[in-house]
Length: 136
Image 1 (cartoon, rainbow, N blue to C red):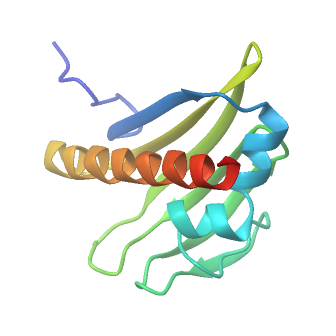
Image 2: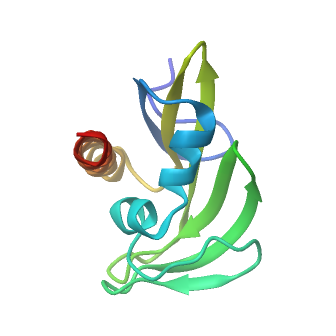
């Protein structure tokens, strides 16, 4: 039996998702805005397909694809890691609401998977709190 989170082709992966009371356009606009990007990736990053980025904490990568009101895929290589992984951020319609999904694959170990689960859960909490503050 394969351990939870271990895939045949993409190594270890983790996904964190939450249904939120926003339309796809509203949620997409926030997640891809400078304020939203700062929460899940880092300040000053622009999500332009093919562009390389580096955050203030030294995480670097390349934006591999961006489909408007759908998803962004990018490589993610923190300064203290010996490898890069792939992160996908997606917004999916769920009736009048939307689901925000953070998915990371190509992790090297179950320990990395658990660390990243905690990371993306914290990111999700920060996004939810910021959206609530903005609406408040």
